[in-house]
Image (tube, rainbow, N blue to C red):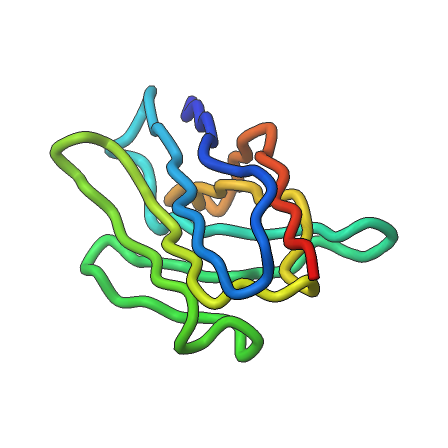
Length: 116
């Protein structure tokens, strides 16, 4: 079992930056990839960024060039650096761990609000 705890969300003005953190604990050896997803009010949850065990990354087109996902294996942490934030980035951001078996584990989410 994997436990994920997000932090770092908050209120920021458009153009500003935030860094989200995800603390990972439990059966870390079983994790295949880590990612960040977001869900805006009234919308479906969507992929923001993902990072594989080898460090390969993939981003949603809407955040490319503005967001950076990274992981610190020594600290069991995953980060999402968000720059040049826009009001449309407002959402609850969730940390995700994809287990080798294909099961997804989720944190409880951290809200991000970008004011115009």
